[in-house]
Length: 502
Ligand code: C2O
Ligand code: CU
Ligand code: CU
Image 1 (cartoon, helix red, strand yellow):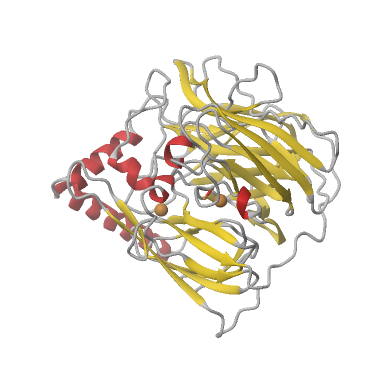
Image 2 (tube, protein in one colour; image 1 turned 90 degrees about the horizontal axis):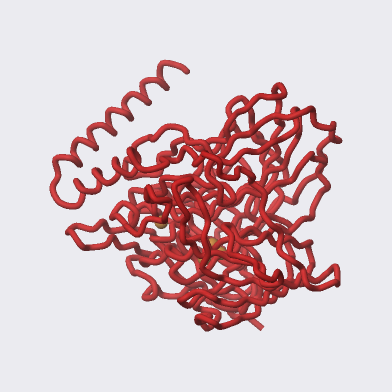
């Protein structure tokens, strides 16, 4: 580290300290905010360190039952229902989750059953709602017909006791996830989410291909989900005090020594940014939201914002018996959140030597190349927020100075290529998500990204403008929003209304 770099770090720290000091001497909400903030990261039960104490540590997810013998049709019964799980040894948590309706006596799990398909498969989901309130299921990242997108703009909400069939084909290989699109800040937090992986693309020899849905929960000492939503939770997205991978705190992953594994990550947390690292190891990023990259790249840390997915290869080197963590480290997402230090997501335990696998492929995905020039239409979307100023008020979140549902729809035509200029005018990052189609990031703060690939969710850093190009998908009403669920549910959401243009 050169002297220049050290200096920058020091002056940032000084700036931070002075901001914190300033906040403390202010009155009203800002002060209680900081207080809550420090509390949330200090003495909370479990405090992110895993539950331990005899709870199961396995990180495997249960695949759903395909009731259709046709190999090109995936047909399943998925039920949303109340259930119980145990995140801490102190006691059970009442959750909402999905269960496999084809298995008699099945119970809701967090995450829900794992759904797998191949490119081109027909997927039929017979959904039943056993929750005490209405819900829907959205297939995050999948290019589904508009009628299957699972939002209040595309369907009548599924009432308690109601059913709905979702039908789509899985056109793109990749890692996706499913979740409700109604009161999502509450429903997803309670445990309603699951992974959907479409396996395809180049054959990559690995010792294991695993999917991890990352989340955090705010637990009371009893082990129950906290019912308390603080102003800080609203501002940042609910901050959990216990970190989960596949619904497990303190999980252990046993792998072969020297194994090459493929790990797929999806971030289902309301607001937590996972900034992943495995000390002494690197990630080779091979894909993200919209599938395989044209060229892999090596990363020391992997920032996974809410809603995003990353697909990586990891070479698990070391000696049999070695244990090391997958951890999440601090990322400065704005509003001067203090660094809580590294938190373990799960521990990796090296077992006996892994079988040697073949070499990685030489060709991967295709490079997105959307035709844009100075004549391409540009849509401008300004993200903003307003802090609560008085006790009892909630913060508000805006798109172009209005809050959903008052946000004017963007009208477009299928197949047309346009540029979206997303201006983050606020003091914190916002992960921006567009339904039903992929986009290609052109630049962030005027700088072209180092790596190219298809995205459906992208982090827009505070006080920064990000541009992406998108070829509009099929006709219908497609939502776009911040994937910090408290923000989406408090106004930072809009619609893109596409007509078929024929
Ligand atoms: Cu994860 Cu509107 O979605
Ligand atoms: Cu989505
Ligand atoms: Cu946001």
